[in-house]
Picture (cartoon, rainbow, N blue to C red):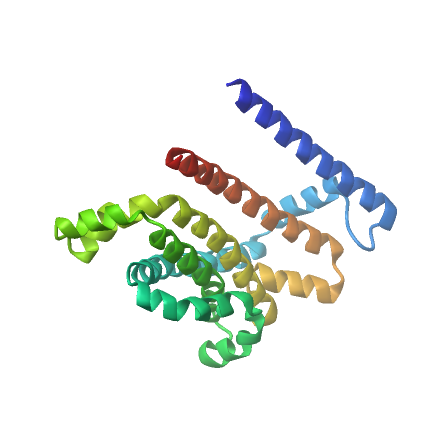
Length: 249
């Protein structure tokens, strides 16, 4: 209980320090570059109160949710297969590493040619950001499973589905969840980038339009909404991640 209170106090101090730094930067550079914390919060509340803003929010949430679901399901399935079949993993490991390292924005013209300026393009762009780290983390997690677990499964003649459900996934879950956490963040980034470069709706589109109009209040307010959402979800995921690794120890 005491450690939990200390952690809460540390978080509050950190948030307070960030807000203070934000206010100091605002006073130094002026409202032509950024807005202050209070003005930004008030404008974000006003945006949420506008009926025309919600279709953009729903569009981004839909594209992000679909991209994240595809990334998780596809990443887990492919990662488990490559991790369990070592030869396939050795072949695809350098390919996946290369895909993970290259800037995905170079692939966006191809995505637009295939899907057009529709929500499917944003889903695809979010997916290619999120699925690769999930595959890599899952594959490495399965490879690091103690061989005795796999030998036990083979001794009992478990089929691949039962092997994955009862042995591979529980043993590799902490590392797999770390990959899911990374995939969440990258899928969100990919979805927003897709909206910024080729979309007629969504929060990324709202940001690009605000940048074009030099609407600093809108830029800061939308950015604040995105940061708060990502920070809240990542805090929850990080807490679960730590709990899983503590159980492993």
